[in-house]
Length: 163
Image 1 (cartoon, rainbow, N blue to C red):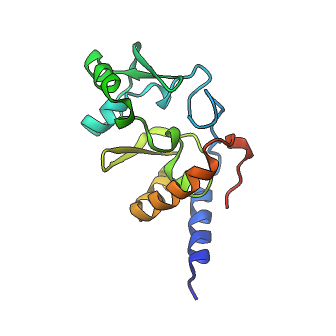
Image 2 (tube, rainbow, N blue to C red; image 1 turned 90 degrees about the vertical axis):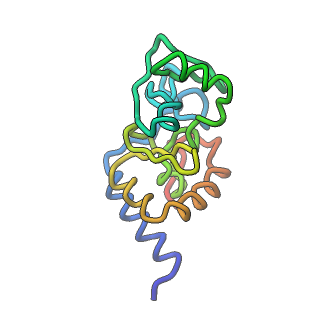
């Protein structure tokens, strides 16, 4: 008999295998944001390019903006200005942590090239297997991640266990 618990267990197992070797994110600038040790978000990728171009574009350390205590890099001054006018439209979901990991109650670092924009919101993943699983039912995984995020947002990544 297939139950929701069995389905979640199977999903967790599949993603767990895909995530083998994927590190949990560092503390960055606080626990809610997946910034590096220098406080840079998205590993220096341009958040506006994800939304406007649907492309992972590396930003420049010379073109930056601060938001919520972290630094974002941009490929152009125009993208920086677009971000500055409405930063909440461009920040990644779940503080820049892996969307599938968040659905499992984890905060996992991401590969910036593994992303999807859904309803003008940026979702990132940690590994191809995690992204494949997340894409298998995007709306359900977003609902799960939204529910989990409220409870894990302010907890350090290394203090979370899959559940």
